[in-house]
Image (cartoon, rainbow, N blue to C red):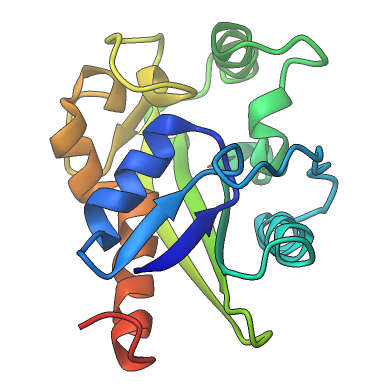
Length: 200
């Protein structure tokens, strides 16, 4: 069975990837599973840059198929902020709550029609022969006036996807996964993997 090393230790993310790409051809492993403990600084100025950096850093040490991602929230009126700083938007000791609080404060008084935003996910698949593929998934929506719901993580409680009147935080996991930026990116990646003969 071939292995795919996911450049992450986030159990939720790994499960999501496994559910979408999974079949009996692959074993999905986390960085912990392959004993990769180096810290990879996400210091690039784009999601693409960070995803490539993660994939290359792991590929230098582990001779398997590597899958890396970087994702975050981009708010139109804030010129794409928080963007690559999504996870640490509120500073060094950032938490989901602090990040949401800071963003909502910056959006105070902004009318609904100007609260447009999107979640973006960039995935990089790197093969042992050095060949790599990049895909991107975008989920458009808007920023709510305050947090709603306790599902998900990150900015989910304040993001209302297009065509809905509830936040990701009020949605069940299955419903969110059908429309999320990561799901859309993984769908594209799956097509590439079929074309490359990696998947049936």
